[in-house]
Amino acid sequence: MEKKVLGLNFIWKIRLQLRAEGAKLRAESHKLRAEGAKLWAEGAKLRAEGAKLRAESHKLRAESHKLWAEGAKLRAESDKLWAESHKLRAKGDKLWAEAIIEMYGDIKIKWVNYNSKTQDYDCELETGEIFKS
Picture 1 (tube, rainbow, N blue to C red):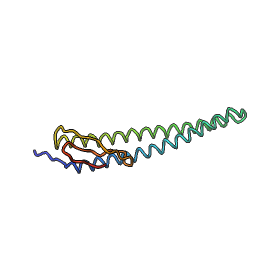
Picture 2 (picture 1 turned 180 degrees about the vertical axis):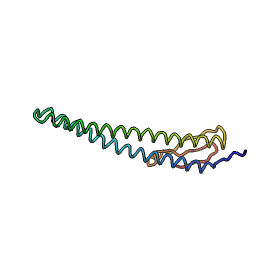
Picture 3 (picture 1 turned 135 degrees about the vertical axis):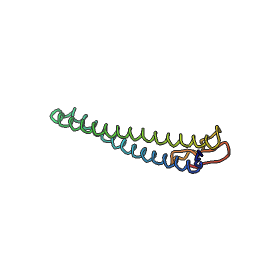
Picture 4 (picture 1 turned 30 degrees about the vertical axis):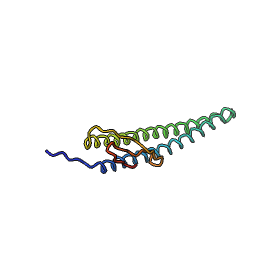
């Protein structure tokens, strides 16, 4: 039975796609975390005002608890998306490493030239090949 070997460029593209998908989830995670933080802060403001205004305190505290709960839900969702992005990024890295080992065996690789836009590094193989992120 013949083993099918995928080219490194093909695997690299898959890795980049997985990392891009992970980056999208991470961006959505950041949005949800920020929105959750805003709601959390708003809840804290309402809670403080409720303590000052005894007559209004019960009403304002109830509203703040709702906002805190909503913020906590969004933060929890953000954490889930963050974890999922880590899984996808790790899956891409594992696939890349396995492809290199299959193609060249145990060689050295270097992660160089961090790109803040893609939040990834270029990969330089011991063979001299460079794969840009």
